[in-house]
Image 1 (tube, rainbow, N blue to C red):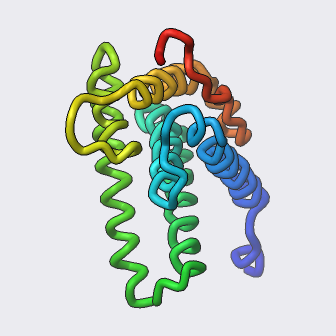
Image 2 (cartoon, rainbow, N blue to C red; image 1 turned 45 degrees about the vertical axis):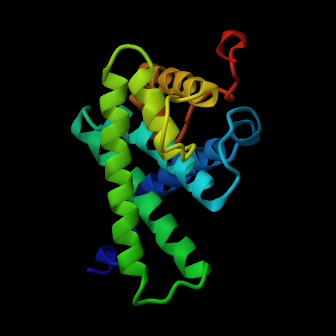
Length: 187
């Protein structure tokens, strides 16, 4: 009977894997190159957008896979949601306001996931550059600039790299994303 109250070895391993994988997502989204080379605002909103982007990319890779892949996608999303909840509380957001803010974060996640999924499904980078300009670079009007186009290339390359990554690597908590670098012909 007491075994019901002890975490199983599998659950502990899964938790460690998710912590490693989500930690890698956070580390990738904090890379200085995004802020220095791609024009992402080094603000709370800019950092949130990059964290959201990388979480969406990993979930995008896993969402249409096997039952295990979909379960891992859900675990990644759950880690993101728990991180956002914890961050809001650390920022001093009151207990009554956290659920309202979490609802907005959830809507942002699903809205960005739909926009990026749709844009990644289209050939070329125009739709993706527009989504990047609007969501990450906070450019509401006009055509996407060079920063949006360069970031769209990075996102498409990251999505392709994740698609080529075996599930076993992700299930071990490995996130093989390259260091973001602008290509010479993008600027």
